[in-house]
Length: 571
Image (cartoon, rainbow, N blue to C red; front, side, top):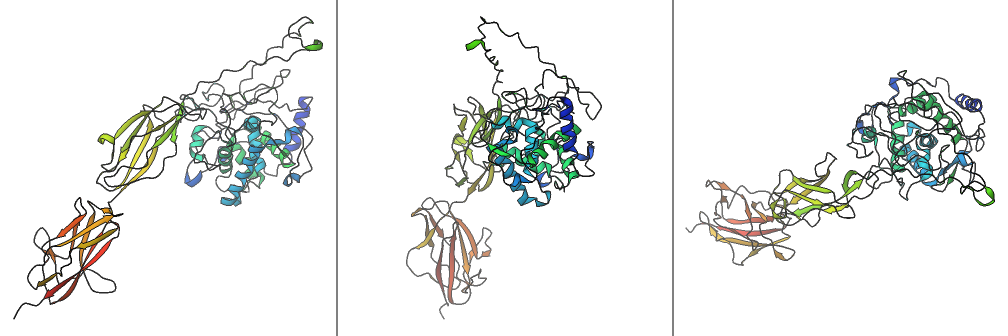
């Protein structure tokens, strides 16, 4: 388990004792039997649709987290959070998109798992502790963070040891996993619990709608009822296996239950000693607390002490009157923060870029072409990425030139389109795969279908009556099939001798065909020629004299019925 930085200081508290008193007071509100010691049974038993949790033992991999506490004064009276105030304390404000995501997650889960009774305030408490509400609400219109929120590498050096499980697709680290996004999921957990909360067709841990819904489903795993204190505590412990984490989340949960309000995105209160929230390459819990204090490390469940954060160096002396650091009137200019290096973008995934339905008639080219986009670890398009398209399955469909594979490089917008795909004569389903060439990143797969050639009309050619004496043969019967007015070449035509009923069936009496072995048959399958024509020769007149029916049916549903007359032999 990762080390937990035990920063029990809160905004506005003058001493550690006051902060401790706040924790004690709020923790006392937990119901009887509330477990304050993490146990191995505190993990979800199964994910959606019977999936199983990852082996890390916690949604966030027990990554570090913020331990800032809310102010001692509550934002409103107990039970007033139903009607949110327009304004309130800065700490009670939650960025608009983030708040909307929490509420939408609660509403969605209430419709599928009402027995869980998930409160959105619990998601808000976890989001506050994990990422400072997505760095104060720094998200775009779709709810995706402007830059990834990544925890430290879980390399076993002061944190849990979790080797890479996603080839760096989510966290940009192909050696060890890192907690990702505003709710700080590790990739292996996200692979099981990831959700599409904003219905954009993607499951993105850096999107607050997706992450909030995933967190809600994770907390509701099994038969938990979060209206019960014991179940709520077990759910929180399953998220991060730490008593201190539970107390911190509980504190914010109680605070938000007393009232909160919406603030514009990007204006949320950030954790203490941070002007920008978590760093672009770091998730929760990586910032020091008040430099004047030296918090003790919290022990992990295994008993190994967590490392103590390195204290910040002492501040520089105040410049003198002639110091260029002085502003007007001799006031000290604020120091310009040194920008932290931005990680280089790396290929994280290949995703669909709007490919439509892949369906074509045998022998025709597919009107739709497979199109994908290469995406970096920042969620941005990535140019000059080699993508290989492969046709797989029992099919004779192929790209131009008869090739089953084609490799193309993405353009400046990160997208690339596969060559034209042509259907063969074999009908049925097959698959097209798009992969980043030479990587183990997940492929994008597309289902494709080849349908048989069709005709929407068929008619007999010729008008002469078809008559034959019993024991003799009829003259050749010819017909022509068309599709949308044009000749329907290579279309399957089924010829059947039918009964003269309201629901015709194959007639076992009267005229017949012969198969290749010369045996009588009354159903025959033929294929039209390039001009859409079909000819039936050697129809034998047999049975009693009378009128019989021959039906021709095409692939596509066109039919024609032709009369055949059998005459009795001369006396």
